[in-house]
Image (tube, rainbow, N blue to C red; front, side):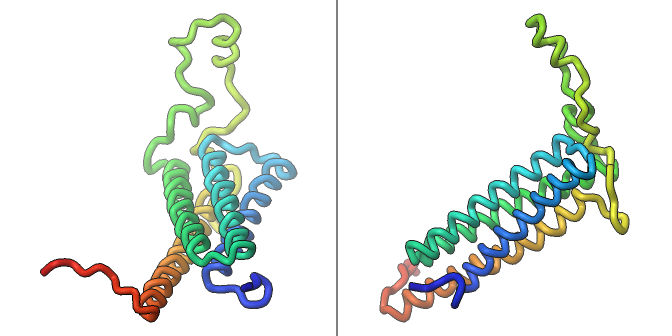
Amino acid sequence: MNSLLTNPSFTERALAASFLVSAALLAGAHLFERVGGFLPCVLCLDQREAHWAALGVAFAGLVVAKFFNSKLGAAAAVGAAALVYAVSAGLAFYHTGVEYQYWPGPAICSGGGATDAIDIGSIASALEQKNNAPGCDDVQWRFLGVSMAGYNFLASAGLFAFTLMAAIAETRAARASRLDAGVNEPTSPS
């Protein structure tokens, strides 16, 4: 059985890196919130959800690779992680554009959406109260001129490229092993 600790494949290393980096990004975001007092906006929370999804996909892929010794399962997981990171990079890119005011953010980012149509007594009055969340264009922290959303974009884009390379490499390896085993790929009629 291939052990993840002694001889991990490129796919397994990509899944492990995916798991560790997403966990570190989530830990950092929660530290900024809990210790630093930086409240997340709606788009920040959406970006966290993408990393939670990547964390779950990477964990599942590692379990499949370790306990079931399934290269196909690990390859599928790293491909799914690449898709999750593509979404995460898109969310972070969109949020960064909102911060730089290249385009407007969603209406809910300004402290609540329109609640005029709701007329249900106390629920309506609770919805009309402004929440404590900052607007999505309110940058609370920057380092070297880059916001947290900007750093998330860089990390997510890098993880997308890394996991995509692993998925492509695993696909090519699977195709080569099929050809070596004498399994012919379907040919298209000429």
